Amino acid sequence: MKIAVGLSGGVDSSVAAWLLKEQGHEVIALFMQNWHDTTGTLYGDCPWKDDKAIAQMVAKKLNIPFHFVDLSKEYGKRVVDYMFSEYKLGRTPNPDVLCNREIKFDAFLTRALELGVDCVATGHYSRKETIIKSDGQEVHRLLAGVDPSKDQSYFLCQLSQEQLSKAIFPIGGLLKSQVREIAAKAELPSANKKDSQGICFVGKVDLPLFLQQKLEAKDGNVVEVFKEFYQDSDIFNYCVEGYDNLDNLSLISMPYNYNESSGTIIGAHTGAHFYTIGQRKGLNIGGHVNPLFIISTDINSNTIYVGEGQDHPGLYRKALFIRSSEIHWIRPDLSMQVGEVRDYLVRIRYRQPLQEAKIFCKKEGLYIVFNKPQRGITPGQFAAWYLNEEMLGSGVIS
Image 1 (cartoon, helix red, strand yellow):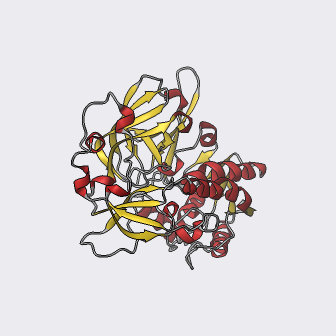
Image 2 (cartoon, one colour):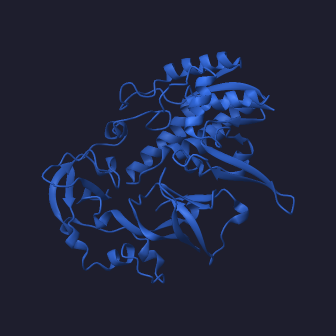
Image 3 (tube, rainbow, N blue to C red):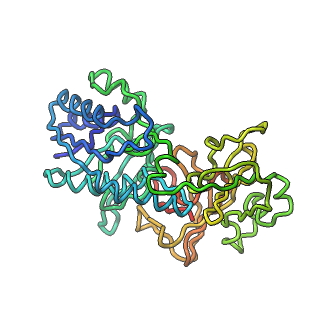
């Protein structure tokens, strides 16, 4: 089989290429550049020229052809512009999920197929299994990676069956320590390279500075909401205390609505769209025993609401909602029908342990009600649901 490996210069994709070569496949390396602008990028992070040089050395070590492709135009339009539009609306997008759906397994895959390959391999800690159903239908299952601390299936939660049919994840059955060991024994140039951090292909950024390329800074108030505010709140009782009454799912899944009378003004900020729920750093407000966390942002009034301490009630919600138009089933053959209720395991962020929940399928969308209140449910992020180790679908949190 002829396989193109998305060689990034990191240890994971390098070992993926090595494994495929050892298995006897015809392997080619394809390095993609997706970002040029360094505005807001913290110095020393994600230097693509260095990554390219290491990827070239790995390809030479493995004696495989090396190709370069510039996808910065596609990345800017389909990932970065989406980021800006979401932040402008007060939502927090996940560019890594979008990068996999729109770039690695779309634009990049298209370029790779033009080189005559059968499929594309990446260094994701995830697994794929292909089964044939009783009706003869071929179905691709997306499974969690074996290493629980590195499972990256969440980042692939928007892939389709067509995309999975062309995807291979060679290191999904390995632990990170095993990958490092293989790289060292094979004397790969990337063996000791640190894992990349920050936004996919952009790197670690000063987010407000990065977003100010297109979003205007605007002074607003920071309002502290005290725990006493919730004592007589029906919304709080429904969303956090875990009432068993599921007759009003829209109420259970509703984010809190605050106004400046909900608390006390304690400071100022430069734009509510630069902040996200659950964020701790960047407020620069002192005088508290415990850290302040953002519990809500209001783009219309340009107000940020904060609470003191990790146990602040405003950080927790019992449920969330995903609009019908935002639902994606990796397994369309297992999609829910209106009126159905199923028990699934759900995560709302990368590396979060899977949480037990019930999913209610209604005409307007999916309501996900957790067994235990969840911290930092954030509009714009993705919720992904699993049946045991298989991811079945995902959707954007409203």
